[in-house]
Image (cartoon, rainbow, N blue to C red; front, side, top):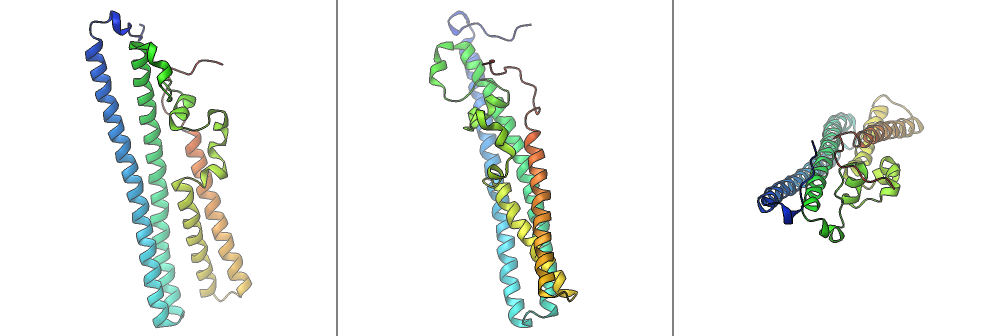
Amino acid sequence: MSTEMPPAGRDPQAASKLQILATEHWSLLATRSLTYTESLGRVNMFLAILSGAVIALALVAQADHFGPTFIAVAIFMLSIVFFTGVATIARLMALNRDDFRWVIGMNRLRHAYLELHPELEANFVTSPFDDLGGALQTLGIDIAGRERLGSVGHGLQTLPGMLSIIVAADAGAIGALAAVAIGLPLVGVLLVGAAAFLLTAVLIGNSGRRAVRRFDPMLEARFPSPKS
């Protein structure tokens, strides 16, 4: 069965269809707004916990002069920060997937608008197609460069990418403190800290890239972009 709508001039129910489509469009816009709000709220919560931990450690350092008590407290508090950071990044990736789904939904609605009023096509800068290329066009991402979506350069510009570096630095600090606690020399402390930082950054980065690659088949395209 064809899903195409007759042009508005020949469809007696065009007005009611437009009203229904517009209502759904505003619903998706509101949902996207909530997604952004939660993303920023999660980031602010993580940064608040990080800031509180740093201030608390500064007070402990003044009292213990970076002694064994400081090291024990620092490892514990930074571990809490690390857990919070990993959970925040995971939630941000889930919110990004949700936002991608809402964009696809709005593209489908835009396709329905153009079926009712095809003469308006020249007025849209966003896409009416619900495949990956159409979603990227709506998001303002260069379609020709979509293979770079999972690249390091693109990843570091996103909220999960930025937090990944902070969380990796936190892991490096935990590793360095643990090395100090077991009595390793300065070179060993630096090597353990650097290894913990790199390992965490690579693991989180790979997880993020896999999440980006899963965007494409999230929803089956009903209105794919025309072949060029």
